[in-house]
View 1 (cartoon, one colour):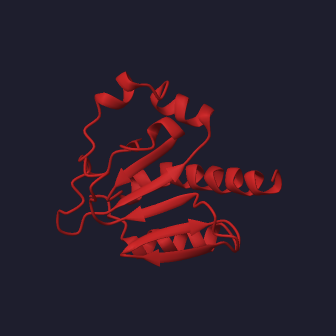
View 2 (view 1 turned 60 degrees about the vertical axis):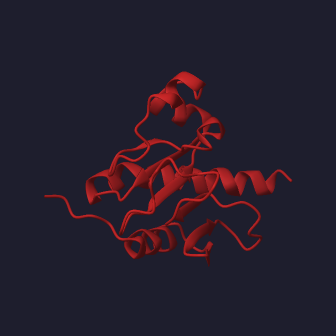
Length: 141
């Protein structure tokens, strides 16, 4: 039986392992930033559905979704092209399954709802990549 990660476990991992960075909690959702500018998060934890994003059925008790903005190549390696077809056949409410983000898959975001520790191991390098991409984006401005 794999342990399930809590939001706190994930937040602690991101802050501890990625060195520095910041997180902001707003409306029960958590946004992770690589530096102090807080323009664009590299990862988020969301805990409820809204009008735009309800495919994950996050209003179930104790359900949250970790979202990570990865690079194009990584997204392709995981899911193929982020086109309508690959994104349409996903069960966005499935727990503990790495999947394209229901809204931002086209922007190479990936998601996992209530990851187990085993699934989170697969997500760790994605978080590292997401943070590097965010840092590189800021340098190029």
